[in-house]
Length: 513
Image (cartoon, rainbow, N blue to C red; front, side, top):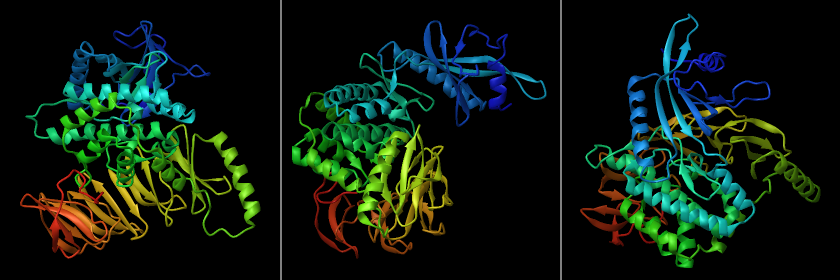
């Protein structure tokens, strides 16, 4: 049977205990004496202590046999890897551990996972917050070197974590990093059919976090922008950040960062060479060259323009009100975005929502992440999926998509689901069916698309302008794009006419996706 939260709570609160082997497990409780718990997907988690150590006890509500087998095999692999290196925490799979009764009095034994949560450990995103707020660059450098060492170990281990982010890493009091939450972990080999695809989930996320942390060392205030961006939450390639990081690296001569950006393929959302990433990480452990701080500070200043547009009133009075209100808001919320179209995106306890420019909550803090409004639309994340809302909080597109991108200039929304991409308009009407296996940036008049391992370009209304005939293709910039045909890198114009030979490089010269 499938279990409910209430059924599990009834069992763990049972005074006589319904565990087979964990009779002495102690649950953390709230002031009313009830067990503290969180629910994520089909799993309920409890902070507990057992045999003098702190753990998280996870009860699997979904009793699908195949998934239970997979989680059991993960625990076995983790147990083996712990003996080799300390970047993993104790992780035990206990089969048929918790006796649970349904509403009809029928019973079954549920499987549970016991994951160690070392005393004094802090989630990495909280550590980032603290260090960046204090502008503690030296601690950020130490943490960055430890992260690079851990990333090299993960690459060498043959493991794929599958859910890397600052939420799945913790920092111990002694400065050591640990990975946690292994539900998506896999042990794969080059013989597996999806070897490259699975590996890329970790590859891209490692690159994202390396680039982000390197930027934070040079400009700690940039973390206010990074922490709410998808690149720090999931393995996506953000077109807005790659040119920024590349320019900052070029100006300072930070070669390892240049190499990592060169490895990223923005069109296909992959990282081309895992071994080259490993070499760049090793170089970053020892390099003292930082990114150019002025480039990053200029970007942050542009994102922190708090002037509301189109609001007519006394400028002097309005400025005073904004300053006062923002000071109060900083006491109430963990993160505060700029005023965009009289709306302010805010976050508290990892929940995101919106205020109006007076500070009144107008869209409840119910999302896992939310973006600024642009032309009356904003992207949001809920339970791992993206959607699009209007300024009343109504869903233009429900949060069911793996990726979403809103371009207010063209009034176009790019979405993906199950590896397929399509386009919608600002009202949520389908413009281009989800028939493409990849899709480039929608910031240009022509959009790169891929189908059947060939690449071409379409307009925002779906019209095919350049048929999918290329081996590889990049986004248009300034009316030109780089494509690969029969092994040749060439530059084309918007009609598909070849202009010249192009430079073969991870991100072609003067072309950034």
